[in-house]
Image (cartoon, rainbow, N blue to C red; front, side):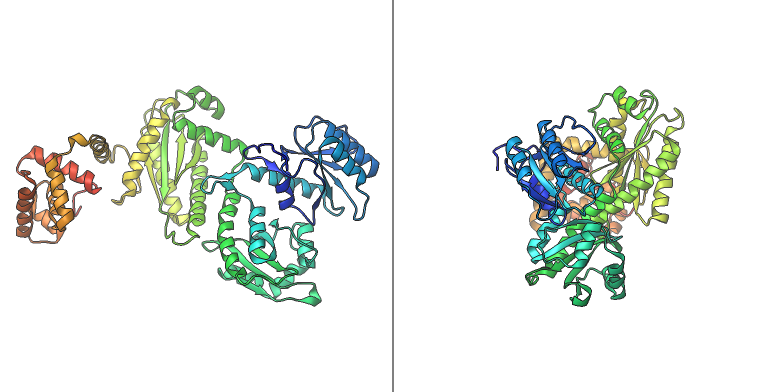
Length: 549
């Protein structure tokens, strides 16, 4: 192993071998070790001359024997990090090893029956996966790595398939693979006759029916060894499956439990595979996110999305109820629902404005509508948001809320529109029955939130009498603080406040007098009432919605 420092997000030969390995590819020689980085995957045809390569994996197609050796040496001389050639079982590999020793290039041997197109796609997938980092876990999102982990936990031979029985990833394996496994890997999909048998035995019905591990007995006459399988599910949707074949050793005692955990881990990766975006669209969405944060020049942003930088624009924020997110399956289900919501929003936004943009950030989805009419921009955005919310509920069974920011005079101010949309959405999500709102609809609540934020940032503005009342409440659980809040929330209406607390008015009057005695505040003083109300709202984390409203 060499002492070079591996670049962040770079694939190395070790990963390629772990991911592909037998029965696809094998190591011939690696003079600098297995941590040699792979920059990209390129194809070199036997009839072409090598190009300059910068740490690439070069697939040498159509070249066998001396011709292939010449191309491998030439590719190494032009900067290739790894070369891969077709090699026969029992073939003399001494010349390839000499090429590796002379040039430092890693040499890989490809099995004759492997299609070059298949290997190209597989290798590019490994390189691409190495560049994808899951921020929450701090590690690569790699189905091949997951398959290898499951293999270690189960003492079996693992493959991960999508819902159409296409093989997505698999673990390394010894010579004990059965015919079903061998044909599935080489064909990159389960063979039809074996799939028909599994259907006949009811295996697929059981995978679709629930989250239980399915046991498949050995069928020596069919060339099928004992297996375990489990469906990869999100809500009621089957995204794929994980299969574990028994090899030389019996499966581990905890293999079934390991499969349950693996299915939950795989669900998130398959959701992200399904909801991935094209590079061009992903770039535009990234620009939109950075523009909302004020990190991109408006003219640069406008030029990239083809919009008028000085035309009226608005940002609309959307969020949905995460629903019952209990257990490990909650997060993949939420991400899938959010992706469904984002897709729905994109369709509606594009139908209205070709240059509209939709992007997700954290748990929310944002829509930018540029080039709005000056006089009717807000009403257009509200109508479109309402249509999206209704469609989400009626067609997708999604509980969506939307908030429309202020229409601003150009793309330079969309950060302001986004900030207002977020403030409005915070209020909408707290309840009150609204599904779509604008800043005008909830301006008082927004202003109150900002006032409470200022009060929180300036502790010297706190009234020590209210602090004393809160301390007394915390110690005695007397009900004085809720009583004062109800009284102030109804603007001094004792009967309305008592109804909201489900107590007699005289009981409330007694508590109010007691609160005055304990704290020293005067609830007959309007200025003290105003400031007491603000501080109590801040300290208790309540909203200013009057009780019983």
